[in-house]
Amino acid sequence: MPLHVPPAPAPALRSVLTALGSPTAVREARTPSLRAAQGPTTPELPLPVHVLDRITARGLSATRLAGWRFLIRCGDRSVAAADTMLTPDGWAFSHFFEGPYVTSTERALQQAEALQQPYQARLLSVPGLYMLTLWLHGDTTADGAEGHPAGTDLLVPLAPAPPGIPAYRLFRVTELLPVLTSRATPLPLLGPPVLGSPA
Image 1 (tube, rainbow, N blue to C red):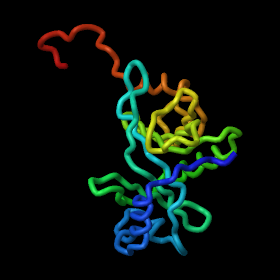
Image 2: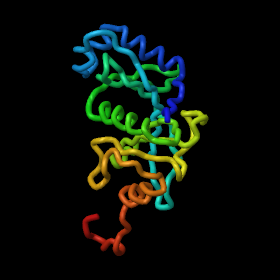
Image 3: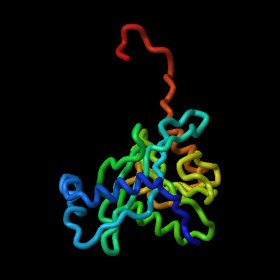
Image 4: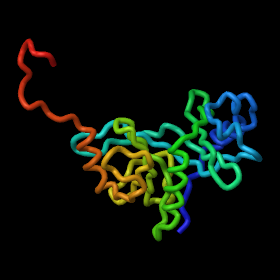
């Protein structure tokens, strides 16, 4: 079943194309793979990057859109990624990067392509746990820039994943959320602190 990739805002794509066409932007990027790429490079698979800033004891809080990420392909593989961000003047190129999340995103997308049910592809970042997941949203017609994970959506932790959470395993939101909640929620004090003792 084909994976649905929501359309990125046109200015976001234009800003990445402009950066790719700028020898200065490519040369100054900390991406040796991009600088060494032989042949044309193209931005593909735009994914909205949603951030989960806070997980409460009751569960998931709303997410916010942080930007759009494009995988930069050269030949038959992704060599880097480009992030865009929303500025007062609209969508703008932010930076190029490479590393494990580029290859793990590509691997998780290929894995998701083999699923029987159609999904819309997004990324969900959980900064408090240093975790990034491929978020497979069940409503393929939804605006990719809005919404929050539904209980039946799937989350695929990308490598490197936090200890004890297997990368590339498909979790329903309702299955992974309790794990994230327990890790992100501070433990209660066992008793009131003693005055004069170090906090």
